[in-house]
Image (cartoon, rainbow, N blue to C red; front, side, top):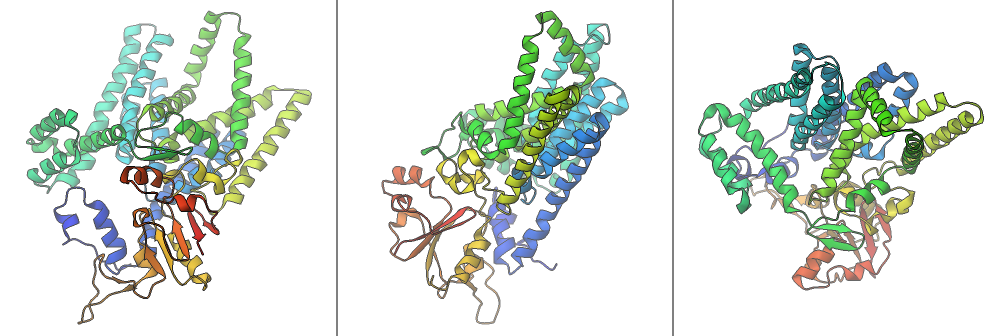
Length: 532
């Protein structure tokens, strides 16, 4: 594929965080084939998702047998949330895989410590850090698990030996992982002038409370050997700053630039297949009933310690799902299901183990009943995914009333990535009665690219900028709420509900007139209204 890249344009050469403009220029403005670029750029994420699924089955089968392996893979492969993010050029699918594998590698080391296993664990831990900056949460979480091992386990017999093996081993692996991260970042900073990285540090962190840290980072940036780690740590700090800063969020008819603590719990309930939720409730109830029959807390603790020792990976994975979810709930950033995507695979595994083991330990009518519940639930689980296809991103379950009702509860990446712009263009082409349509588009695509003609200079050269489009003959008309009520016949939007915040702040009615109407078409996440 022959492509041009904006290597001479300011967003690429000098701008701080000019990646968005450089990306739009590369994909849409330079005359490249946007569809081909998007197709091939999605392929690595898709292959990673498939590869992880194969590994997940292999690992689970080795530990729990074919039935648990197949059921875990079934939950994973037919999850609308996994399918949605397997086709996006984002870090979320990769983080979901590498976070899981890092915890498995930790358990692999902890159950039989050796320097070879420690080195392998450190490498997987580093890969997780390189996949997504939020993987930094692995360090405090695994430290808590390591301390728990020292307190609960009885091997080695000396607590000092346990402290050395588990806490000391984790510290050593963490240090080694930073060495791997440093090595990976060396090519990124090899030819980067110091003043450019200093500018990047100062231009990326604005919070006054963090300026002392900014100064510290620019100081250590004087040492060339530390610049790769400075670049990595800058990314981590930007994530923390992003979470702390919040985002304009629509939730249950409310809009705020602060987080809603019930946002992620409700999102999880509404975007997780109901069959899986039922399995989870059944298993929690069964475990609670079994625990209530335990005669003493001491006996319960003894049983937990033994089980924790024999099933370290499963306990660590389940604990991480709870930890990651809790941190997301406590944070100030509500951006969509992708922010809690890593909790799903541990849940798939634990539910598969629980259901299969429950059936195996049951007898008579109970065994038949449980097998029937699992069969019906599996059919329901698969059917809900098939019905949602190919609109996996805006998937919502029956509790929410289906994907068509998503806009009543959530917006942003829980519903929309701007992924339906091409389908909207096709819809307009298939409906000749639409001679003009206003579009308020929110996403990474370019309506100009799909709806307008390209412009050329007098000498026949393509005008390779955002101004290089001729929309005079197009059916497309760009629109925003602050323009007032649209006077044409058709309008499409992808950002209607968040308009409540901006309209109130700017002192106009925004899209109130659209909220009082029913759309004539729902094209995935894009709604089309006929006004006249």
